[in-house]
Length: 308
Picture 1 (cartoon, rainbow, N blue to C red):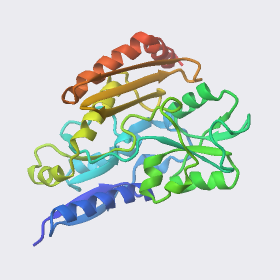
Picture 2: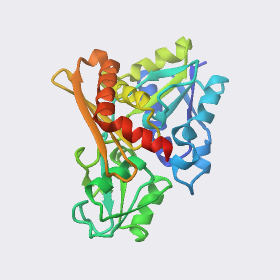
Picture 3: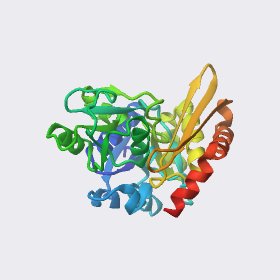
């Protein structure tokens, strides 16, 4: 009998595209391996009419999947790594971090305008506090409206004129074969990405040697180093969907360069910091940059948000 790997995933078009990409790579790397797709509905899939920061944040998209992992119904799970909280449940780990897609945010506008070219008062859709705060810093004259739903739903709302434009992740559009819809790739000076944006994380059980050996073939060390630095910033700043924060680490010339920020909810105040270090000490770099963000005013911003 051929070996079997049960791979858990959410049922959205993007989640399925990501899971099937990983399944195809596993079959290619391990001839004869059977990969069974197991679709698991999460609370985040049920709650589509409220902003994420009001209904539970990151854990909404992973709790039920992690329960299936822990009780043995699946062997591994494919996540958008930006959806995973900084701390995983006891007994689970990241079995593989594959090579990252583009980490950038993009603007999709109905009339083909750039972010600078949108007329004052234009309605721009996003459900992310991080995107909202950075947009307001750059263009206080825009109207930012909450925009939930899958990628196709958000694109349709742009096409129908419900909003003039929307901000989406380049990686999601690319994985769905919709990359041509991007009007403009937003520079990190305008829109620093979310922690681990564009990266996938494949979660598995600790001690499951067979599954971990299969997943090891998908590992991309530079991506893991980058996202470890970013996730360490998130963990130390207690960043989730309720805190407008961003971080991006990039490997350049053998060094890991990390930028991070925390913003007030209205985008009026931004605490930013950056640093670089040895890729092998990614977590230490994340801690150092997080401390710099706090010292630059991030601590005051976080205290203000916690009282809101």
